Image (cartoon, rainbow, N blue to C red):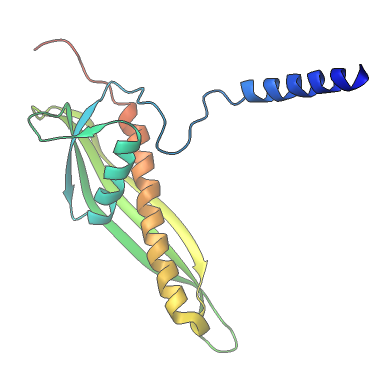
Length: 171
């Protein structure tokens, strides 16, 4: 009898815990709550970000279409990756820590050209330890950080895109 009560109590605790997990989604499965269902992506000097945006938009259920078929045009302008030395080893004078930064601009227009969101510049920064003894690994790490910065930028831009209001009334 006591064993049965423990099992019921355990099942109740598990059920309550699972209820608290509502509104959590795995990457790639979140619903699109935005009024924007289709986008034309125009990337000027922003190829890394363009690739990441295609992935993020597909995660959110937003179709990437031609300019005529799209509700909005998302313009990505000039991704700029910057690499800066943060610290130097005092004994050897060699680089120890490096900072990678990404700056990108974006704006949103209707397919008729009406500006919905003016050009906004956003920045992301990440630093890492430069290991001269593992130069190939460090180069790979730098490449990975560039990709991750572009992915972070894309996720942020998609969230900002979801807040853009489209006037549904006919002109």
